[in-house]
Each structure stands twice: as C-alpha cells, then as structure tokens.
Image (cartoon, rainbow over all chains, first blue to last red; front, side):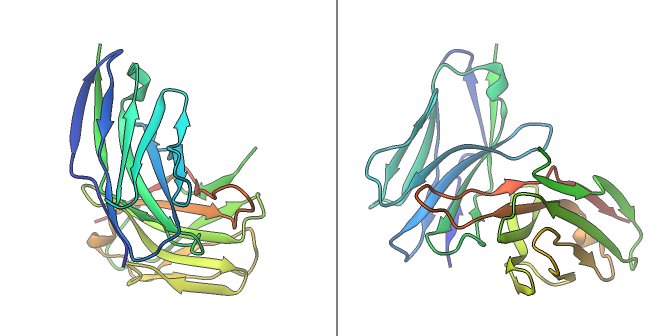
Length: 115
Length: 115
C-alpha cells in the first residue's frame, strides 16, 4: 500500500521569506502523480502544484516549486516570497498513474506566516 | 460554475441515527470519492466509484454505504452513527487525464458531529 509522510506538523515563516515543506512517500509503482494541496481556514481544498513522476523537470507555479527526488521518494514544496495568504494547512498527496480513484494523503503541515 | 456540491455543510447527530451526505458534480467526471479528515491524520478514503453502478471500498469503509446511480451523484450514507464518525467529510471527483495529470476536485466539506 502507498503511504505519504509529512514529518513537520507545523512550520512558521516570516513574510517575504522562503520556506520548504517536506514530504516522503512509499510506493512500488513506477508511474504516478504527486500533488500539494492547500487548505485555508475556509476548509476548501485547493490544488497548489502537481508533478508527474515520469517528468524529470521539477514543477513550478509562480512562487511555488517542488523538489522531486524520485529515487529518494521525496517531494518537497518550496514557497518563495511568502505572503500572509499562504497561511494554511498543506497536504502532500499521491495517486497512481492508473488509479485516479484513489488518492493517498499525508497528515498535513500547518504553515504560519508572520508579518 | 458549481463543480462539486456537498450538502449539508454542518450536521449534528445522535448515536444510532442515520443520515445521508449528498454530493453532486457537474463536470462529467467518471471518478467520485468520499474522504474523511481527522486531526493529525490527513484525508482518508472511505469509498470510491469509477462510474455509474460501480463502487468499491477505500481505506476506512466500515459504517458507511454508497451508491452511484448516475454520473453526477454519489451520496454517502451513515447507517448507524457513532461518535467515532465525528469528522469532516469531503466529496471529490476526478477524471482520467489525457495529456496532463488529473487532480481531485473537492466539495466544500461537511462537518459532522455525533453525540
């Protein structure tokens, strides 16, 4: 079974600084997708970024980028120029290439942004 | 632009009562699923469906029942509510991507309290 681990329950960052959230996963599959979702206090789950495992290039979306290390099964999220609106729970998620009905989530990291 | 609609958003039940959480999506997605979110545990898959008439169990199915008679609707039934089912429930839909990676589209969540 696939597992996703987020070892940082809570982190803090100063506004305008950079922060990295960690995620590791375990799978025997060779092709899969990885995601970072953001959950603000409104409870709505918002996709931040996604990575296809077969792509070597790390995904980037504006201030958000990932460091995908397939051999190490590591998928960290870097947030640059942190803003107050980035404060939220962040969840790392995995799904297999042919299993879009099953997503596996980490336990989440609460990000605090200090003004 | 409805996306995934869940009702009700809040519900309080007494132990032993039954209820149905409704979920509807208007994106013609083939996959639908239910997750529960508990503190420190992320989101865990309860049941999922890969199309009308087809459902299967996820990680934590006990105490829940689902059916999918149409592509749009995927209700979750609590047969006899227990305090352990106090949680936030998310309905989500997804699709088989062609070209780009798929993602989960979430409803706004339903907070259920069982007394």
